[in-house]
Length: 112
Image 1 (cartoon, rainbow, N blue to C red):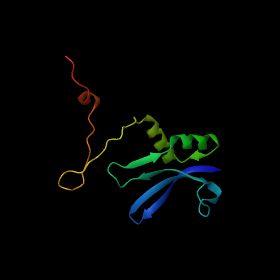
Image 2: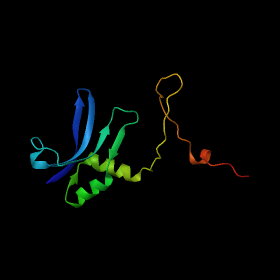
Image 3: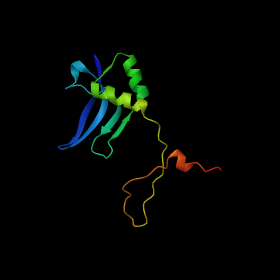
Image 4: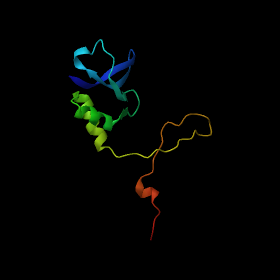
């Protein structure tokens, strides 16, 4: 039986997870059939990236997602698409702590 699950990577106390497709009968010994994303809980906010199209393709082939991966896929389907915004370093040479994306109301010109 195929499973879509989180595979832990990273060092001790520094977890990093890959979203993988595995044969459940061979999980400890077998290689992953496919990697379809990753999850980094140490970032603030946590970084999650899953190729939902690939996940749907594997689910249609009979793969069963774990409860956590199922919740992640559901969350990604509801999330709005965020446009990429280029980030430039401040003049002091230090990395920017956060980037603010203007809302649609602020970005739209005021017409009176």
